Picture (cartoon, rainbow, N blue to C red):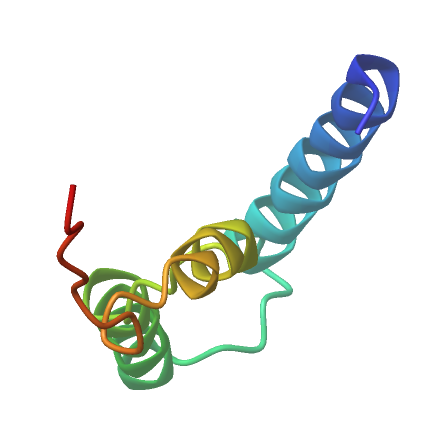
Length: 77
């Protein structure tokens, strides 16, 4: 992914997060404290306890080496 596109996505994400924080912390925020605690705990647990998925590239490399299928051979020379 080009650097310019990554930068644009980061700026958009940052702006969205700032807008969300402003909305929630404003007097017009419609979230009650118990609801916010539940949301925060849920977000924290999802981000802390997610499974790590290996990249597809690594799987293809491992598939190229089928060590179990190769029989050892003895060179008669």
